[in-house]
Length: 193
Image 1 (cartoon, rainbow, N blue to C red):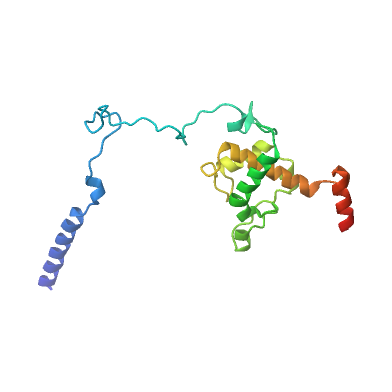
Image 2 (cartoon, rainbow, N blue to C red):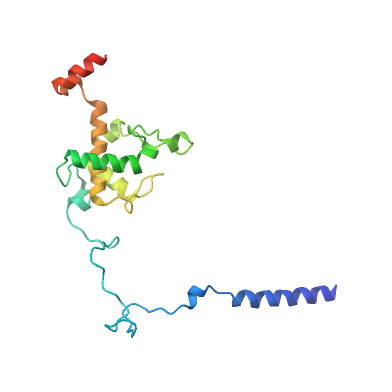
């Protein structure tokens, strides 16, 4: 029994030394710290200038409605740009990629993953969401809400507003009265009834 215990202790010691000796080779690679002098680059600095065309993702201190959902502490119900057919088309494209898996293509909250057992999403046709200001949707897309994660890294501010414009179009299309339609569309609707 004593010999077995000695062997176990010896194996444990060997294992500890072997594990301590294991390191990723990446940890041993040469590297430079920011603002440290370097003889590797011609300018003698380790920090590199920002490449033209790159966009900072964090720490943006942006002013204006395009980047925020509130003005004077109140949620806005206006868009930071004119809503055109191009904006709606872009919003529809982004909506179908990022939103329809949960909210479905009509905005009823019965997307494919909901049908597969995921937590039901909100219907955009709920009266509370129909009456919500556009800034509410911008905040939810940016920060997330409930089971919905933030989409700030997937959707630019411009695309978030385009998605909101498309959501407004979905809401309007579901709740428009017949007399609000143009005459040619009214005739088509009456023909299908």
